[in-house]
Image (cartoon, rainbow over all chains, first blue to last red; front, side, top):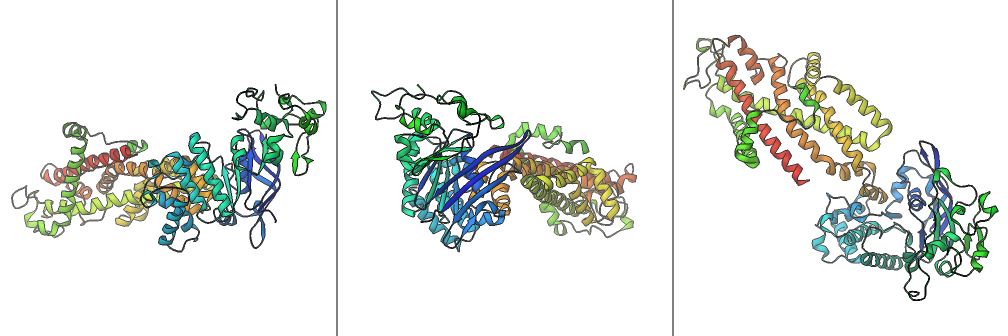
Length: 339
Length: 290
């Protein structure tokens, strides 16, 4: 089956006082219906920028995107990056919906919960009447697990907890039956216990409705729990993309390895090595190192890593890595890299 | 008065209203303001039944009579009952006062919202226009516009709207700049709402309170401005009664018929205090609620 979203060489450049800055460089991945793709990386690695570039929502005036982002629906395929603002407005919500990071501030404080959900349907004519929109809103609220939905419909966001707000945000995103959901760190602002509930809800909805879910997170635990495939971003580039199981079994990029090493795991509690942090800091995008962007922090870096840009290459069937020493890394003992 | 308009939250420096607030408390002061204003509005609407006299019919034989039970506020140099004229004038003055806050509020809000939301070229054009308008003192601007258009109700509206809208535009623009960066605006765009919809339905309800607070304190200043304009001969043409024109006409009789100037002046003072008490009260209430 052809993928829902097929992104090829997405590059986003924003103007800054010191000249143009490339915040997303040559990002390619595809997302199929019923698939959950994780996009992981540290803060500032360009994850959110990828999402926003797709929907034309980069919050910087004068930014530019190049590459291709093909979205295929039943009839045809559209390159999102070439669409006008007006055409994009028709895509947003109805074809591709985005869930933003902070659910509590993602709801308009002066609007009732019900209105936040029905607004999505009334704004583009998905619902024919207020009553129809209201009925659907009640359905959606039940679907996302908001109890007592009849009464909650008339509550204001400040009367809701963070987790409940996130459920409302998800309901509003689902309101116009989009095919793709982009969830930009949907659980970051929530308590750990609530994070888990929301994540399970998202995954369940994604499976039931056969959605494509692009899940942005910095939490490897979240990825392990929910994604079939994962793309790791570092300094604006994808450094590794693989099936989740493969990546967890043996990463092909030292940065992915570093991320895994600093994620706590239950099963290895007694005999495990301690959590190992990645030394150093992510680079400033204005002063990127030559060659591999990760080499200043990489224990495996060689002379070749410091000179030329590293291409993304296939290191195994279905796996891509931007590391010259991917095979060496795969052959190493698990503890040996950052210790 | 022009100085006061520059400070957005300027309150009337009325020692009396301050003392009254201390005396009866915030709520009581607001209530007193509301009661006085209601009385004035009621009396102005019921003027034809309250007073047996006509506000414009002249009776030269009964001119310049001092206050008596027959003529509560006396009569003017044309023999017209001053009390009747004060009542009829209240209707006109209050209407102009409210509308001359309402129109600038609407115009300033729309333009300020457009400038703040779209930024860039739109922002530059609108805000440089605002700068140009604020460069002229409030009354000078109003006088200039009326001088061009000729005195009358319509030119009064136009003049005070042109003189007053820029403050609202500034307030609204500043608020929109803050709100448009909120997550819920990004969320709204991610769900495919159009710019017009986001601006009108998602941003404006969040920023309207400070403009109402400013409008509340602005009403008194605008009413005083209309009387000032009328006093300068730029109000409504005679014989229509307004407080400002009544004072202007009575000016030359101040030593022989003090009531012609003093009593309409007193009406302005009382309405001014009432409005400022009510406006401050509502503004405080809106602020607390936020």
